[in-house]
Length: 153
Image 1: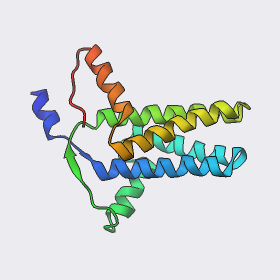
Image 2: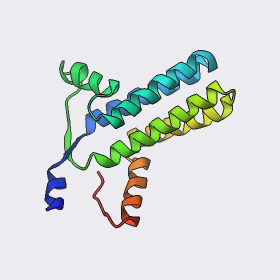
Image 3: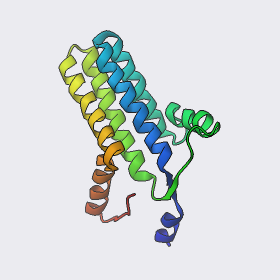
């Protein structure tokens, strides 16, 4: 029965892509403007991702997508069959990395902060460009190890 329930679940590919574009833009902006102001952009991106992961549909990027981009027809939804859990897991990992980068910036470890932010930037670019979600991949393997095989889209 669980297989049938997950088969009916959908993931809006355009919402995922919007999230990736915004994260790529924010983290890139942080690199361009540097340590002082850039760290606040990293805070913004990390908190936004954390809210979206903790309360799906209510993160700032998700609200912007739904109430502006989608509502005014700027971006057309593209619902596809899939489980949103792996994407939420990936978003949680990204938020964790950006929040760890924030701690690094505020404790004087700017190099570590840049490395952590660069990992998020790189993985978001890979996901957007090649449709490979590293966090989803990790989620799938954790599920397999735990004996909960899930289809990931």
